[in-house]
Image (cartoon, rainbow, N blue to C red; front, side):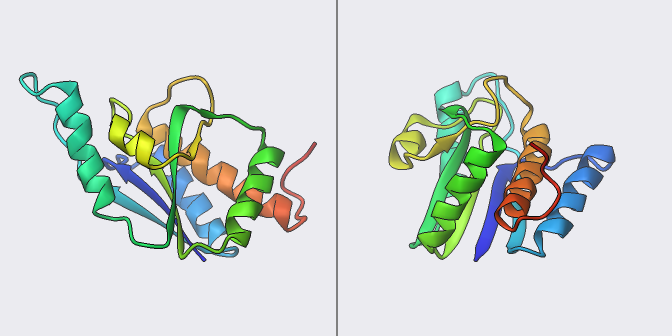
Length: 157
C-alpha cells in the first residue's frame, strides 16, 4: 500500500529536514511511503483567510484520486496515544484503500469544505505546531505505529 504525507511548503535544509528523511527511509521497510510537498501559497494582506484556505484546498484536491483514504491532520481532530494510532492504522490498512493520504494544512488550517468532505481528522496534540514540525512528528509516529504492528522493539510501554 502507498502511504503519502501531503503538505504545503518545503522544510528548509537542516536538522529538521534530515530527521524527517531518517523516518522516511525507515518507513520504506513497511510500506511505499512518500511525501508530496505542494508550493507555498503566499499570504497576501488583501486576500481574506477564507480565500487562502480555499486555494490550498483546491491544491490538495488536485492530488486525490478515487479510492484514496484521506485523513486530515488537524489540531482539533481525534487524539490518541501511539498504541491507539497503531490500531487505527491497522484498520485503515485492512480496509485496503489504494492510497492512504495524510494531509497537513497550511498556516490557517483547513478550508471548512475540505473538513466536511473528509470526516477523518486526527490530531498529534492539542497544541499547535508549525506544518514543518508536524511532518517530523507524524513520520516518527507512523514509523512507531508500524513497529508496534510488527512487534518490533522500538516502542516501549
